[in-house]
Amino acid sequence: MNMLHIEYILTLAKEKNFSKAAEQLYMTQSALSQYVRKQEKQLGIPLFYRGNNSITPTPEGELYVQTLQNMKTNMLDFHRQLADLTELRTGKLVIGTSNFFATHVLPSVIRQFTDIYPGIDLEVTTGSINHLKSDLSIGKIDFCIEHDSFEKTSFYCEPLYTETHYLAVSRSHPLNRSLNGSALTAEDIKNKSIQFSHAAPVSLQGCEIMHMVDVKPENIFYKCHTDMLHEAHCKPRHMMLADTIETAFRWAETGIAIAIIPDSLIIHGNFGSHPYYYKLDLKNASQNVVFALQAKQQISAAAKKFIELFRIFTENK
Image 1 (cartoon, helix red, strand yellow):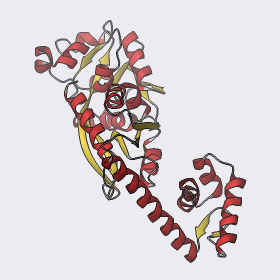
Image 2 (cartoon, one colour; image 1 turned 90 degrees about the vertical axis):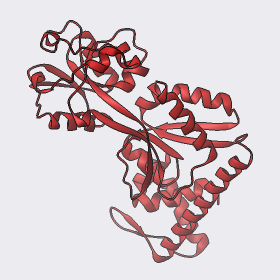
Image 3 (cartoon, helix red, strand yellow; image 1 turned 90 degrees about the horizontal axis):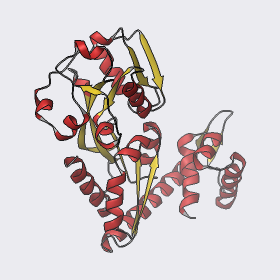
């Protein structure tokens, strides 16, 4: 039995549904069902109880699933240790993250890592936070780089850097007159200028009558922004929703609406023009970006080196 076949059984046991498991495995439901029946015939035991809407492992199936999980864990540990023994000349590293971090924050680190360790096969997979947690918990990815929303009972996390959010207002927007004296440029934020040090934070409460753009609920920044608005007791009368934070940025820059923008995008977005930015007097305006792995998983040498490079990159941002 190869690793792919092991994944068939483990995914089915986790999803408890042939259709959902097949979707996760990028195969047809009938193909997965045929494989399971073939395994049951070869073993001479039923592995799953079939119900109308879900399936559950039989007692024999539970033992089989646990055995396969141990086999997978041992094989992954073997490959990690092999990569360590060969001094990172060979191996594979799979990183899970959001589209945002993959696009704006990771490219420079990835380029540096692949230059230093060309023998390591580096793969980056993106998805929602729930999708990444699922893949991390079953060993599909080695670690995640994401906002800190991981359950500490299941995952081990270490902070990488703190991401800060700013109110973004077009330079021609009339709101600037009431916020006079606190405006920051992108360069102020990047270089931590004197203006940055002395700029006073502003309140969102005065923004309720303004057009504001935010991201949709499936976006990684939605919860943070929702928490900020709740903390500020701010309910904008005119709220527009965009698919991406990049779209929200563009709408703020062109004056369509004001927006809340993370410094990761301000610093790493490589935009030619920027709105004005204002510090916010909210504790939720800052959130940790972490690397996360399974609670009892050993971090490989390749992963350690990648995180070291990432820390250096973000410290010098």
